[in-house]
Image (cartoon, rainbow, N blue to C red; front, side):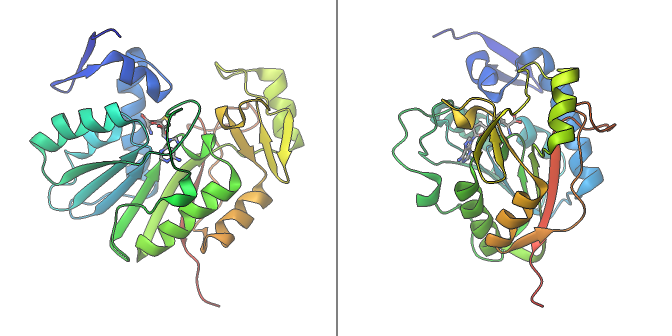
Length: 259
Ligand SMILES: C[S@@+](CC[C@H](N)C(=O)[O-])C[C@H]1O[C@@H](n2cnc3c(N)ncnc32)[C@H](O)[C@@H]1O
């Protein structure tokens, strides 16, 4: 394996781990800045927040957030052990309030030899302790039952005014038609295959490669997890159907009000 590194914000990041984030060094900074700006605009991050990031990868967002979370805590979780080890040895070493945890969840793309399923895992945070939970391009690789499990965990750990920001792909017939016509994504995403009710995948043999849901399915999964949308779905421009400054679609969730 190559030990080439990418120099970024004073860190030397192994390029083979950068490549596992779904994009390489050439777009790393652009995506990092876009994430940072979007989080601030949509859910806001404060210096004293406790932030949980699921699927933190090689710490793209964590590095940016070290400039903001000065009094609070950041908890990063991923299923790629070498990325978590790198984040601990480099980011936590400089910022002791930034902590990283490996979950050995099996996934053909990111951790083929993993021994657990998402549903076996608790997220490493105490009940009612987290202000913001973020997931970039993670629910885009997960199926409904596993997402609902994480949502139940989010309900457990979120403070009463806490928010989740999670990107996803949302489809209906018009969006799928537009994606076919425009073919804007580098992966040619058109979500032609119905996998289960309300869930479409790009590749039936490797369903987790790219997963999309109908709006109705998103409401249902969120409710099953005890969460609800805090605002309408934020549509991205990926399919060509929506004009948007964002790429993927996104949901902002809160604990479901007791009615
Ligand atoms: C496309 S990458 C995005 C990484 C990071 N969010 C970023 O934007 O740089 C998706 C990440 O989600 C992680 N992941 C996939 N399934 C997961 C699961 N069930 N629980 C936690 N992380 C998961 C992968 O290991 C990978 O690091």
